[in-house]
Image (cartoon, rainbow, N blue to C red; front, side, top):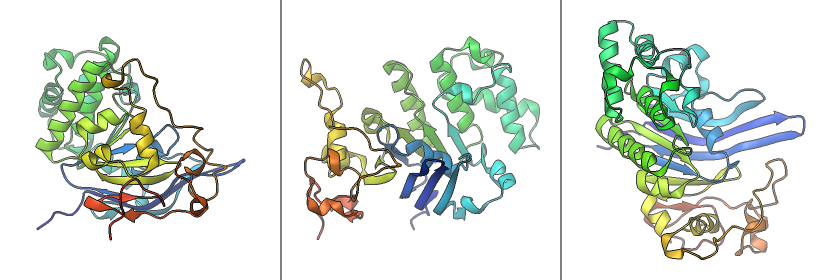
Length: 327
């Protein structure tokens, strides 16, 4: 019997109500993540990826607000929970890894103090010694050497890669059902990035934790994710299994992103770029948001395309996909 998904996002809409107008940062986004699976959320800066993650965590501040849709976490719609109930979920069953680890770590507190407090806040019955053991083991799992000694350190005594490992360890500390990672390896060098991706993938497989990995880097998605959703101007334009989408992209935007990735086989050649700029969410073009940058655009694209089923369980939001539409 198939397990129910850990997270179901259905028609999520999040807007920022500004003096200049309404910015629809997330516009009808839908996806699901199963237990132990990793979903990559990909797109250019400003596509709505981070706002999607913050919406799930209920961390969108005014003038932003969730205007519609459902966020079903283990069957419970978190959009309707009180703030006190959300605080109980955050850090225990629902965790987030930020791009800057210093958003997670307090610079004036030792690592052991921060990790032990994170455990006891959600498990008040646990002893200080047991919480410390859990913190030490969590540091060891993310590859930090001499974890017992490093617990006594302060954040400034750790390198950027080590601080990010600590942030990841804190996210996994209470064995949550879902972790949202917002580009946590962007500022790290390739070697450290590869080590962290390996550790995160292993932890998800071992613990059954579902992971939403937000990134603009398709090479990270290729190495880490099981499935991928590609976002553009607040909407998902393509979604499916990561190998299918990266090997045979259906949406012209996905194809353009893949061609823009530097390759060892193309050394010395000019990098491909998608023409034009991402449109302002205050002034989107009529119909398909990608229409003015797309070489396949036609008069049909003046209408808004719906998500269409393709082969192998994929979906695409395009009137002229690069692969055949399923019958």
